[in-house]
Amino acid sequence: MCLRISQLFFYGTIGLLLSWLALFYRYSVPSTRTTQQYELPHRPVLDGPTAVNEKLQGVAYILKDKIEGPESLVVEGDSIYTGLYDGRVVHIKDGKIVTEVRFTKQAKCGSFETEPLCGRPLGIRRLNEKEFLVADAYLGIFAVDFKSGNFRHIVKSNVPIDGRYMRFVNDVEVLNEDEFVFTDSSSRWDRRHVLHIIIEHEATGRIFKHKISTGKTTVLVDNLFLPNGVQLHPDRRSILFAECNMARIGRLNLETNEVTPFALNLPGLPDNIRQGAGDTLWVGMAGVRHAGAPSVIDAAGPYPLLRQIFLDFVPEYWWIKHVHLIRPRHAMVIQLNADGEIIQSLHDTKGTHIQDVSQVSQSGDYLFFGSFHNRYIAKLYIER
Image (cartoon, rainbow, N blue to C red; front, side, top):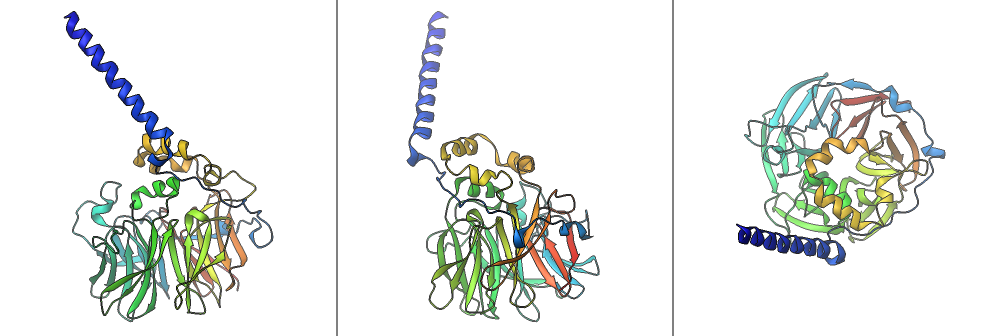
């Protein structure tokens, strides 16, 4: 008995020492970490066109508590087309869902566990008279005909491009009826693990161009920090893309493939970009950062070791449920001119009426607001 206890003690001690050595190696050698050190510009002051107001508190709701996560919207008259958290792509008319399409036959959807199986439709655009393009975070790009309920799988995520798979297809923009561009936010992490992308501050995001007639997909830009929204510039010779993790928007010349800055040091983390009235652009903000309030993403930059420990020991599903405890409730959207200058902002500083706007779509005198988690579409009348 004493011998057995001695053996257990010996092997237990060896195991404990090996565990401590592994942890020491993991956290003392920078090359073993996945987190990167970074520094964002000093947070901007909210003044002038970004001065605080409460205009977003005037929103009305469409399908409140009947839908979840209408991330991206196409608004045409009294019709709205959007994708939802449970994998459906829907046509809403006069405030009611009249058509829904699913890309898989999965029976149970709408949870953290089933998201990769059911798909998660995000960016949506009209492709032609009959079809819409839909970017699904897990499955790729689809062309959807809402009238017939049919769809085509145009780009598949399980086919590698230049040796890397797409893990997080995000937004799409139509160049013409045969060509479109789209973003993949990461080639390492899927949408469920978006906080890994943010906390690691990794740069594996890409922008692609796809030609439908040939089926060819090419990489336009690589090594981006969580690229999400993409939008044709009013000149139609370049595209704008949001780089969420860097609080900036870049501009890609479609003829030369040259990337230049368009809007830097934004007062939030940009998500989708959409055309507004005239040559203006609306930008949804996934989070707010400004000089008048603390910002976790800004403060965490110099501390990759702490972020690595957090990633290693806190399960992703726990973050998803509790991230609201540290995320500012302040909702903000901004309007830019064709030169990338902020000309207007709308706020709900307490987040009592709306939070986390992923996209702003303008239709006449109304703005429509999408979100990756809100349980409604919001609508606001504006004076032009």
